[in-house]
Image (cartoon, rainbow, N blue to C red; front, side, top):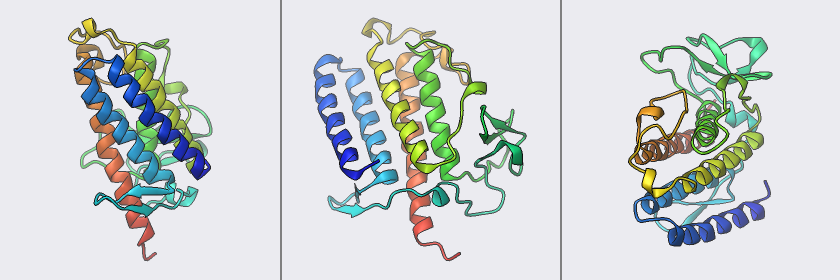
Length: 226
């Protein structure tokens, strides 16, 4: 996406945040603010043109290329792969449908495999789309029909759309239901047994910690020696 368009989207997010603060209650507001911050920061670290360095200064951020998106810094990585090539080391399947899929296994292996930017971003996008669907949406999302994106630009745009869908789902929940379990029918976790606040908190920390991992991988890629 064009850098100016990205800045425009960021501006709209900030304005939406102010509007939602007036519309939402005090329980949702801090979680929504944290979510907006995490998603906006991850998007700027992926697509640039700049990102806050943490000390108040902006640093230039190169657009994520396909090579970096799929970069495997160590042996045995899990990633997004062509279905015709089969799953990667230690994986037993490629999640989803279509020509490309994400490495996976019925049981999480130990120790956990090192995962690429592609794997981490695709994982975030899938959970956001799935939870949005099963949490105020049509409840039709099925992982077996989800299609992974093999290209960086497409993956970033898909994440952006999924983040917007999840945000809209959060705003659709009535405050009176915040402490009730069973709001979500998302089948790939314990969501049906959790309260609204717990699910929102969990998705926030997913974006925060995977976003930090992606940022570190970008720094390592820029300084790689091979």
